[in-house]
Image (cartoon, rainbow, N blue to C red; front, side, top):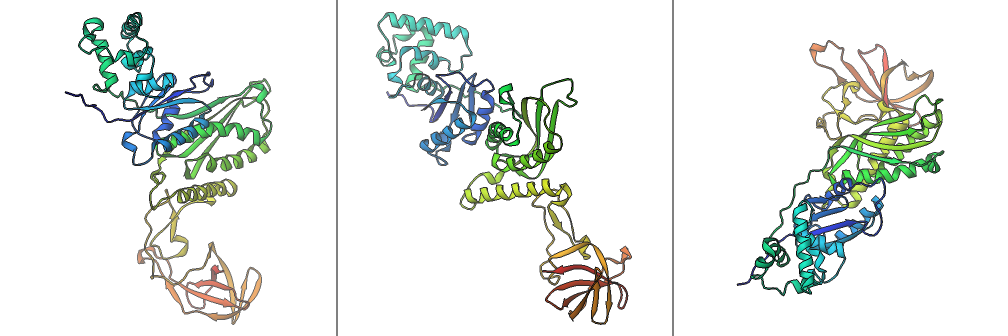
Length: 446
């Protein structure tokens, strides 16, 4: 009777920096969080191993595509890695640890340590495995292929249940339980700088910040989130002449961002303005970025109707709006929601978010001017002359009256609106509260 493999998993093991030391500021949890873009089923082994179950995502990407995208993510975090794909957690770890091609049979006998306990959580079990490996080597067994030549019925009497478990693990007839891992809720990245890395100008400072922001936004993309409020901080050397050794800037983005390329221009605009007025007075010993609030980013899932071009266009437009807000002021750029109010100055309100429901006004009002004044401007009408902002214009044609009024309970006089064509091709939008009374200009047509 032949045994059947219990699990149909396909596990990718990413073993970080196996040949050289990890960067000082590297942490495995943020990297694992960024890997959530590939699969929601992730496990970690401290300090440098990430397991990703990619079998259920085979319709979204191939193994080749997965490996290429992982390499991009590794470069973003500044680390190297060995990657192996197998049908279970222990096998993928053993293959990645030894970097041997050809499957488990080609691995040395020492790989039994990873097949028995891939997370190293059982010290007593590890001692038992080491003793079993030493006993097998004394018998002349050096590889897992030779270990498989031992009859399964003879293993328990010589090496106990642990030896039989390792044999069954090699054949795929047992399934190692997938451990639960929950990513942290705090999005914070920090970089410590040496005195030799002193950034006296804006561009070198942004270059160092980009490395930190790449990691931070990769974590957001893995969680399908976008940044809504961001705090950027610079820690300065604490000299006696420095009044404020901590410089902080908080960004409340009108369009949430999920990429470094969209946020860097906003950061450059704010720092260029603020550091121009108050320059940095000492060495920067550290910089950090903390995402204070996030919003879901459903549009990151690309489909037939949401291609990469649409996604990049939306990111670019959002970044442009945020830059305009930095340049013009917070109250000058906002989302507007159309209301049912009839008077133009009350026909819209500031929206709390981008896609709030709009009032359906199609076909209910004539064409409106492209520019509407916040406050109507008094004008003087004398026969066919209109005096507007101390200048006299000749009117060519007055349109039919359009009467706008509020509800009777508001006790506000109705307005009679006219489109007045001026000599030279321009047109004003004018109203009066009663025929023959004072006139006001409320906008103009371009």
